[in-house]
Image (cartoon, rainbow, N blue to C red):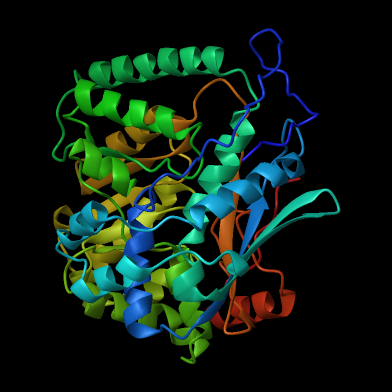
Length: 424
């Protein structure tokens, strides 16, 4: 299929020049296995427990771009057509079947699964790129990571590739050197371990593979896995991930009392995985409201907690204090940090907490799209379930996503969460 020429050619920060137009469509996604592990784990849980749920996911770009994303629409539609032609292959299904926590019936479902093009639409809405996936949740929830990876790669194909990759390699070498220098510091009680969480906002699929392979080869004592299931399989790494906001948010619309949705979601997770995948996400309605629901039962059953918004030091201290109040040894638990991390920030958090608890660090954009280019802050979030709005009351201003202010106010009231002031 021919690619529509883009009349807007963005300048690069390397001294000008424009991007050579691609003569034919080059697929961004070549395997349905190339997504975050937690898409599979949430997908399985929803298939088993709420397969009838209807859902809507909406794409949003939270920051300024070098050129309008609406210029991608032609190619984006071609890429989505291609995505909807893909099927899970026998070797991919065999790999998933080999993961202890993946059930046979879920693999059987994936064997016949195919994305439906009618469930996702793309359009120019007054100069804004609008992407909406709407339909049965078990048929639309997996669009998210693929769509974000497609938008990101199409966007960065507009820039000169050679200088960007050269700069990326230079920065990656600096990261390896930084890790080796860090390794000379005095040992602490718990080790430093980090993971790749960079599928959705990567520069490109080929660059993502190079980054992960380089870290695996050069610093295996620190680099312990990737959320990218395809790369985990191909490179023999541990696939990393548990749950995302959408899993807990879905329970806001499943008929349980709103005040109890977190407990209902956590209980469903425990029953589904029975000891596996035991890191809980805490910021769907804020850390304080989460901890009020995270009682001794859940604190003993879950291995740890994941931070994704708000001050990480404050969050971590609250988590450790909560475990202490429950008389749980914090050295048996794990705190995972994943909010806009870089290696220096991860080192700082490690030095602060490493003598008191186990730690993990999921690093995304700073690993897979550190090319000296202005990156996109794109998300594709669950907004409605079964015709009802759902929301996230993030601990960070700007991360709250809900277009129904009445529901948002009600959610705040139910959980006694004050409105955050957005910095001016």
